[in-house]
Length: 161
Image (cartoon, rainbow, N blue to C red; front, side, top):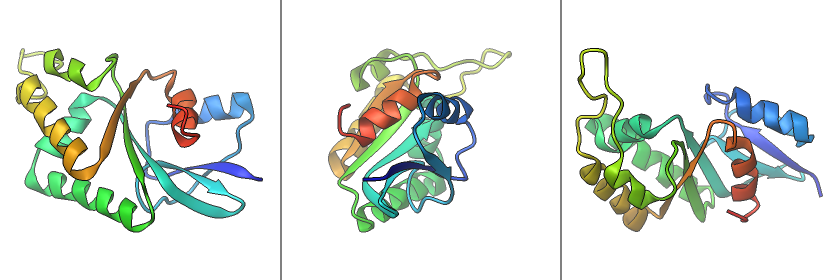
């Protein structure tokens, strides 16, 4: 059986992921993915049963789910598109040094030089919105580091994480 990871061409912050895949000898291709950022291609067929959407940090997540209505709706459409393609597991993998979704409640938004927070929404409100996406749309929230993301992507696609 031939298993190749497909990385979406629009995924821009993935140099460490691709480098990791090269180092361990995991075949991958970079091309358009219909939903999310990473899926398996098994024996030449795209497998959307598990879709991974890699996020740079919680600032990006907040912009997607709690930012403008346009961004919120776009993210919901992406989840719906994944479901239409056969997705049974939609995982948002966030590069943030947290251990669980509950840790979001005490997360501190980075600040600009002028002291203004990048995310004005309180962390408890962001947590509640993430919980809503979890219960309403079946989104799984997982956390990783910049250098562990490649390993975690494989583990999630293989159903081990």
